[in-house]
Image (tube, rainbow, N blue to C red; front, side, top):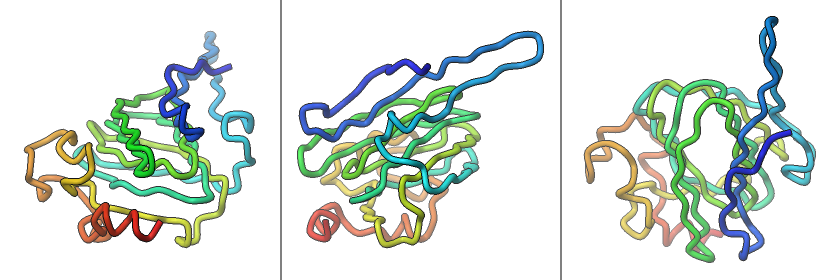
Length: 176
């Protein structure tokens, strides 16, 4: 069974949980657990695989209904978590054999420190209706200057057009 490495924001009732996965290895290879329904409190309805080149920033967004269960199966990423209602903010580095359970209301994004392969489960099927995004470089976001790379140079990062044109944190909060 996976071990909880650290929890944050527990006083808010919305805490992201970082889990270090147990690996059971022998001469044949290994087996590792990547998900239990008890970690998220809901069944997984969709599985997604995401490959990111080193230097990719997958920017800040949250869901009102959906829990994300991220498992890094290769590479390392700097992850930021943020709750705009409480001010909870956390920065961590996730790597292979680590899982992060992200409940509704916790904004999340990551920067690929090296090539990364992320497999994640969603408790809702993705259709775009539960996606609330804000600009990862907005000066009102406490983690705006914590992304690796040249400070105040958002053009340095590999980002989607959607991430580049994301609303401000104030606009995000108003839409919440």
